[in-house]
Image (tube, rainbow, N blue to C red; front, side, top):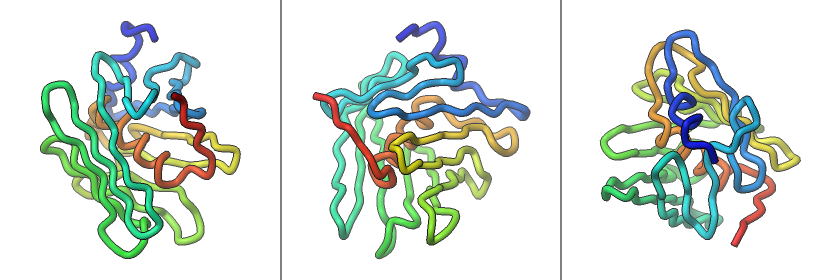
Length: 162
């Protein structure tokens, strides 16, 4: 992973839209570079390592990560189904909502503004569209954590790597 390429992927302005793709446990940017990956429940992103703990049960979904500086990131199910999830990345709060009861596609909202969109495919490929609306920025580490949480809860195929 070339760390010189990672920071630019996390800067989203008014006119920026990028599509990243999770294939298995690796996240690729538009140029095909790996910008994050997961190994043995550790999410490697930029210069950060997040220890991932998740509960993918049929009745309740929870995901928690801790950064090296002690910040806690969480994704929690708020109702009977996983159609609406709430995430906290440090002090920042996000909502992860499915766009339809019949599809697993999600929008990620920050203060009611869409900042990203996830689209799982039946093949296991998961597209992550960032910077879709407005000038609100989605921090890079937040974006990767939120996208991985969506992979855990929504992807039909997940190939864990040990």
